[in-house]
Length: 126
Image (cartoon, rainbow, N blue to C red; front, top):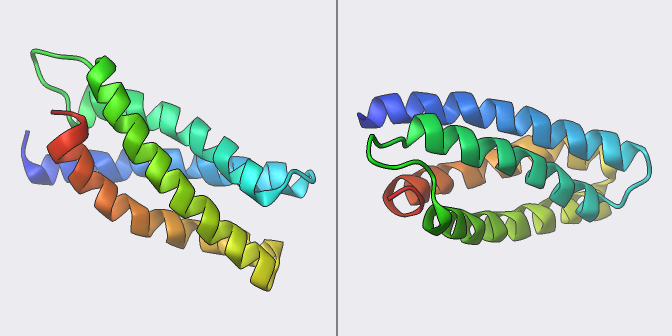
């Protein structure tokens, strides 16, 4: 699959992931759940959707569906990104307030998505 086609699918699926992730963060933190916990919960929801769709569509290969090795690699990438995301969103919430953390979440996730595409294409789904 071409880089352009993969990029388009990665963005489309990423938007769906982000909506699920951000929605969970806002809903849970609005309900009183700590921002760090709400962020991780949102990322778990988005990651579940993203691993399945990106493995089945974006980085699909005819000879393989997502397997345990890809799942393990995805877990390493996801864990690293979750740590960075949670630190960033929690810092914003502490420094500027919850509303600013909600607004900062898309920027934080967008920055992480750029690196994630490269790592996913060349390592996770290989």
